[in-house]
Amino acid sequence: MKFKKLTAAALAAAMLISVPATSHAKVWCYKPVSHGGGGGSSAAPWIIIGCAGGVVLAALAANYRDSRELTAAEAWSCGTLFLFSRPRNT
Image (cartoon, rainbow, N blue to C red; front, side, top):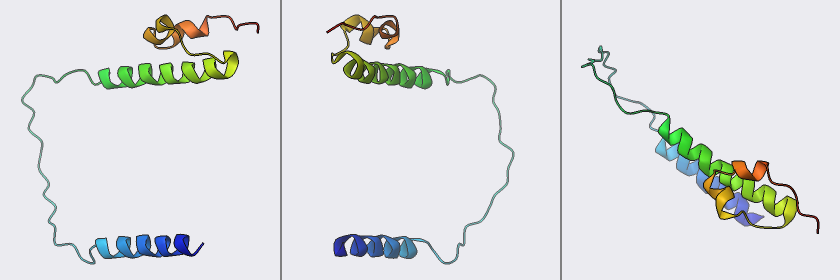
């Protein structure tokens, strides 16, 4: 209990010390220049994160429901084949 209080006090002190009392930063307003063209697709990271999340959720569900690991096909399909699998009767 004493350790938690000391840790909380140290974190609070560190946050108070790290915040500057005054700021001398200037705000510059400017119009961004667009040179045309486009970057890459911003959907790619979300697709990758969604696939990884689907594999993890399917693995947790397979462990809970059937007490097993995912098969390779279920993992390669981002967990969607697990949705169509039937539970094992044990």
